[in-house]
Length: 245
Image (tube, rainbow, N blue to C red; front, side, top):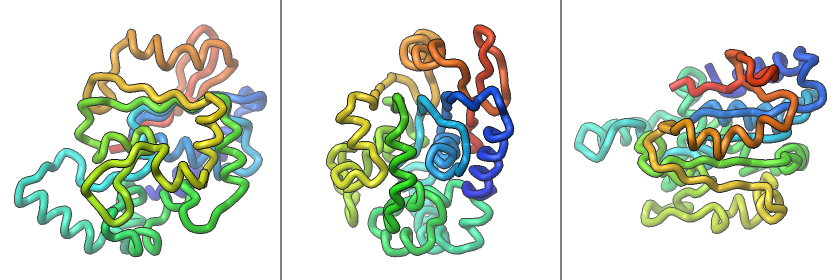
């Protein structure tokens, strides 16, 4: 299902939940983070999001096939993806296509990619998206040191390859998205509201102690957090936007 459709469904759900009217938190897992950001930025008339807690979110995109590698088959698959990934059919039927960003094919990315350029304000700068994102009380970005699903893993912190090159990976504060503050990330960071967290495990491999240290503090003082499957924690409704790999 395309991310715009997923976001629209989530938006309607949160608007129908009266218990969220005073604000809520979102916990995002992997590509579920992009739906979470879509709700933050695109959901007209939705309740305010207080904290966005992101575990392994591909915020700046990904540049390789997950769980592939560097062998001949993977090189061929990557080549085929470059040929078709930004076509309408793939964009409409393969959700990860909406956040694959080939650094040496940015013209096609900007023309064909349907979701990531929109929420990252890469082309048509939308002040409403920026205002909503920068209104977060806290943005917790958790990167997994041994992550081989997200390439590069630094995308969890909004880090990425420079335009036109695979040679290095820019930290978030050296990307144009940050320096020109397209979505309000720089403003949030300078206000001390961005928490860059690095844990040692693989993709989404987080311990209970790490969850207690880096996730729970942003939930217990607020009334509601977003978790799509719904469960109770200390009498508070929690909803999570799950990864759908």
